[in-house]
Length: 54
Image 1: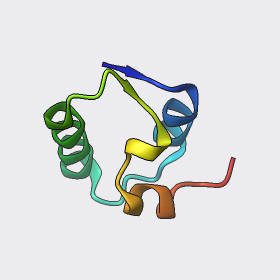
Image 2 (image 1 turned 90 degrees about the horizontal axis):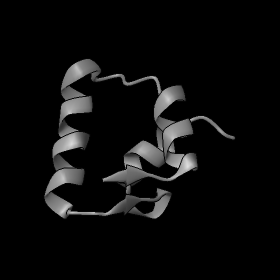
Image 3 (image 1 turned 90 degrees about the vertical axis):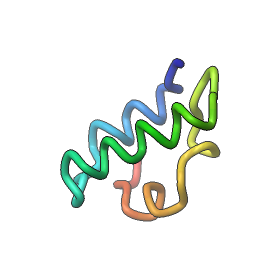
């Protein structure tokens, strides 16, 4: 699995309010969905809503 540049930037700047559990949940979700390249459109809406503007 690869991450689009915008996804990498979002993940690095995201506050992760759920700490490691939230990170584990999003990693599991992306793994189950089987994306080859993860784009912003593939992420759950709550991640996009709480991400910083870039």
